[in-house]
Image (cartoon, rainbow, N blue to C red; front, side, top):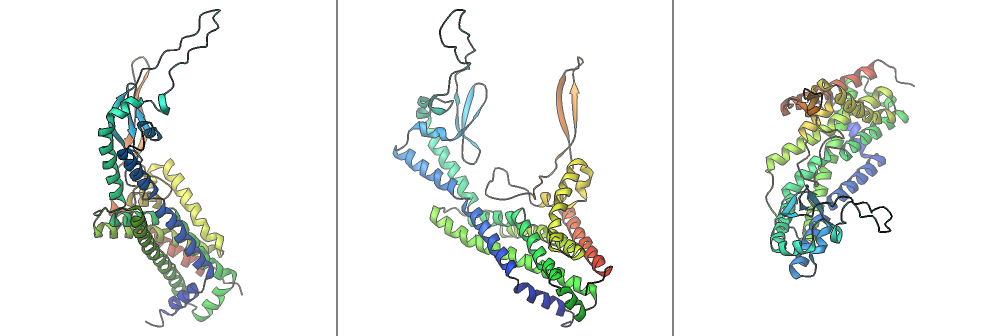
Length: 386
C-alpha cells in the first residue's frame, strides 16, 4: 500500500514547492476577500440612511437616490436589495405635446413635465409617507442582515467558490501544477521511477483533487474569518440562516464543480503536454454553454447545465454566487399565437423539465471519470521525449 502511494506522495511534495501555485492561491484569497467586503457597504449605507431619517438630518428628497418601479399611474421606491418598499404614490399624467401656434415665438411645450427633485414622486407625498416608509426601510435592513448572518454568509461563500473565480483558480492551478512538469522534463524522471502510467496518471489527478480541495477549504476558512470581522465593523447582529447540513451540501456541490474543471484541465495538460492545454478547459466550458444554448437536448449530458442546476443563484441575493457563466435553461422552443387577421397575440416558451439533483451529480462524476480515462489514454499512447 505504501509503495502504491509513493507517486501520490511525491506529487504532493512537488506541489508544495510550486511558488507559482502559492502565489495563485494568495491572489485568489485576496479576490474572495474583496468579494466578502463588497457585501457590507449596502448594509452600512442603509443603516446610516435610516438613522439620519429618524433624526431629521435628511429630508424626503434624499430618498430619490433610490430607484423607482412605476406603471402608468403610480410609482414605488425600490430598495437597495431590488425589492419595492413602501406605499405606491400617484404620479401626474404625462402632458401631451403642444406645438406652438403658427407665427408664435413661445418656447415649445415639452412632451411631459420633468420630475421634481430628480424623481417622479413629489417631495410632499414622501414627507407624508415618511412614518410608513421608515419601518419599511427597517424591515429591509433586517432582511439584509439575515443574508449576512454567519451561516447565510458561509453558504454564500461556499456557493460563490464553486463558480467563476473558483473555477479559474482550479483551472490555473492545475495548469501550473501539471503543465510546468512537462516544460521542465519532470515527467521523464517520474516515469523512470514508476513506469506504470496508469498509476502515475491517478497519482497526478489525486494530487490535483487534493490541492483544489485544500484551496477550497482555505478559502472558506479565510472568508469566514473576514466575514466575522466585517460583521463586527458593520454592527450586523443577525443570526439564523441555513442548517449546517444545507451548508455542507452547498459546499460539496461547489467542490464537485471545481473538481470537474480541474480534471478537464489536468487531462488536457497531460494530453497536450503544455500549460496552455490546461487553460483550454475554459474553451470547453465556453463551447459547452454555446452548444447547450443551441441544442437544448444536450443540457442533460453536458456539465455546465448540471452545475447551474446544483448551484442556483438565490433570488434577490446579490451576496452569493451562482452559475458557471451560463444560466440554467428553463424554456425551450417559442410558440406564438395569432388572431384570425394575422396579428401576433402572444408568444410563450415551452417549459423544459428540471434536471434532478442526483442525476446532475451522476453526470458530473461520469465526466470526471471520462476525463481521467482520456488522460490515461493520452499518456499511454505517446512516448515521453528524452
